[in-house]
Image 1 (tube, one colour):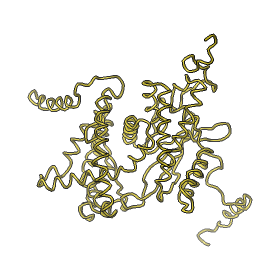
Image 2: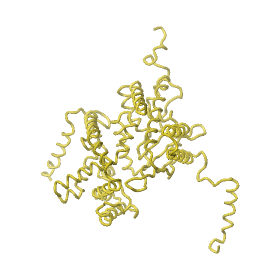
Image 3: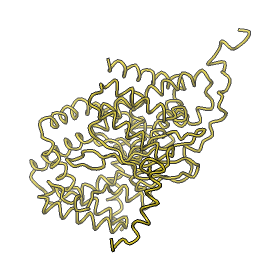
Image 4: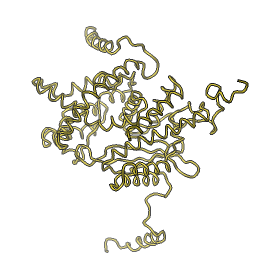
Length: 260
Length: 211
């Protein structure tokens, strides 16, 4: 046991250091905001000048039915991650249903190209190791934006590794060309599926970084709570004071100040 | 008839009730939160699906629905949080119209994105503070199938004798909460003038884009 500790700690420490190139740690849920914003801007530029044009071209030249089949196959390929975390969270019914889903789609669905499971009442679920950690009581920790990967939290970072370990492509060690093709397709598919969300962000956000951070946190909370309403104090309970506004202050309305 | 010997006994009162009202019995009481959300969403879908209307006409009609049923002032308060209490009347009068214009532009964008989605009211939740949340499901085309593409919740509050929508939550993301986390940080860094300026710039960019 004494020997195994550094083996785990070292990569973790290196990883943390690589994320924090000399940034100051501030208070609140986003202590690394400065670094996060830098990576956010980097990701945004990368998206605008590289990913979006390629993704738009992909959507244009590839028929919907083919794109759907690719989406299905990639979802299916990564579905072992969902099943594992169903069981880790003690959701045995959902774990069995998701196992049946993956089995049906991998076989009769021709390697996942066709989603035959949904009409059989084996609908798809979102699940990952970050949600498992949350159900085990782990707090989200600092918000992070990773280069290329986007928003996450300290709690969700280990899930990236678990997701990779659960990907059959990792087990079978395929030739480089196959790995690259699947990787490229995963990026194209993922980007094309969030186009509407990105458009909405561009319209709705006053500060896109803050919009994305809050949307990510609320969305993850929704997945963790299984869509159940939050308990405890809420923004709806606040008292906004009397209906009439307070008198103008000197700074905002100098005209009302006599003797000047 | 043998299997339903009491059929006329059951049917008669129902029939009488239907005739008395002079219309099919509504599923929910008129004016209830559920009825309002059902009506507003069905009317909005009808407008958006109407191919005889131009984009500008659709914007106007949907915004009319929003004006009648959405309480912008409460949404603005929820979005600013406790900062609202310290704003004087002049700043409130500057902030609320810019905020409303921003919401309007966001609606216009969503209207332009409409393809063939339908809205179903799926449930209702009575909140402990007296508010009422109506749950809806948006059905559209996703991955080549007709299925749920989003869950949208409308939170309503009784203002006087009418229920008004005070927040919209899309797939667990509450708009008021989202605006609040943006506004808190902008307010703490640059104050209300900075926030009004940002809203103003965003609205100016949106109106330039539409021309």
